[in-house]
Amino acid sequence: MYRCAACPLPLFESSAKYRSGTGWPSFWNHIIKENIAKESDSTFTMVRTEVLCTRRGGHLGHVFPDSPRLTGLQYCINSVFGLY
Ligand SMILES: [Zn+2]
Image (tube, rainbow, N blue to C red; front, top):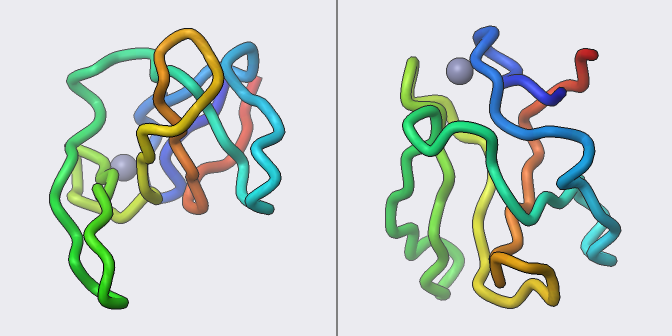
């Protein structure tokens, strides 16, 4: 189980974790849709989709539509910690 680094909201399961080659922990699915907010992020001259925790609005990472997995989504997350 992976939770938000700033609050205990559960976000991802380790079963949905995979190696994407980006260097960040990557997940192809989330646990509860309501725990994750998405916002357009156009910093660094490219448009990406930022992923935020819905509880405190904390930055979690980005989601990209280029996963080879079931959902087609790649959540690159750099603000979570694992907790089982
Ligand atoms: Zn949070």
